[in-house]
Image (cartoon, rainbow, N blue to C red; front, side):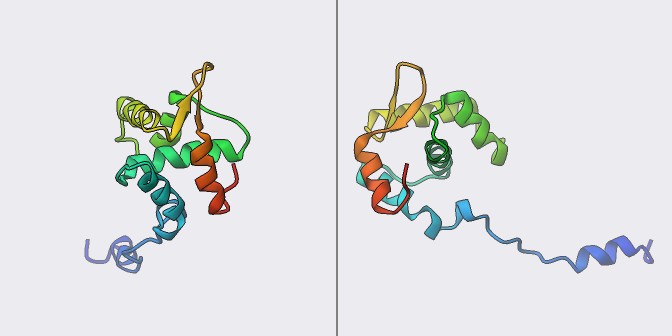
Length: 122
């Protein structure tokens, strides 16, 4: 057991992996400012939900709660569908996003203007 090369190989790996760009503080500054403008605190689930909506907008489409949850669950499977739905409801209530008749979410004009100030064209 002491001569197992697999155990030695584990010790040679770096303990810290690089932080993905989507969770880098500076990369999320536009979302922080957006949340702050609308009087909302920053939270991981809000970042993830807004990133999903931002990516969908950049690609030229909108998405519903199922699409947002699928994107969020791909990186954080512990976040439930209900949690994502509640975040979307709160963002709608505060006027940051809007639920359209097709049941898809889109950024409001005011939110778009703030994002465009940061060169995050929608």
